[in-house]
Length: 191
Image (cartoon, rainbow, N blue to C red; front, top):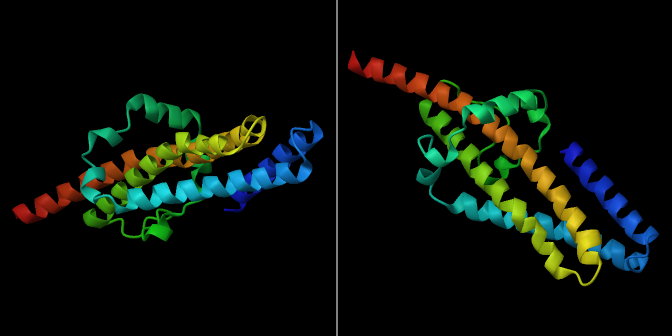
């Protein structure tokens, strides 16, 4: 969380300082516009998260082909070394009732299925936040739409791509675990 707030804070300072230095608008307007855009990003991301969280779990199950991770994607995540930095990502799933920070019940197929569902909900939430972040550009007049709102939207995009990568990296391993657990459950029922 500190990392995210540091990135957001540093971006706000840089965006404001550059806009003030280049005279995009009065200094107080630049600061207000920057704070407005950041607050709007948080609000829009939060609204999207609330709406996705209200959707039925069956749309996000482990068997949904829309959330399958391809072999090429897995290779990309290895190249990006997602495993090394994924735990530094801000995880707010606990606010919706299911934290994805730690695997709490690794022996429960029901829990793993729920974990996968929550990962898939997170992926959709972050992906919808990519373009939505650019709506702030419509709220500022003139040059500030491009000199303030656009850079804030780009930072928001970056901060939404990172959790998407982490969630997509984790999902195949969870699906393998779920398959193993379901196999054991089926074998136990057959006896």
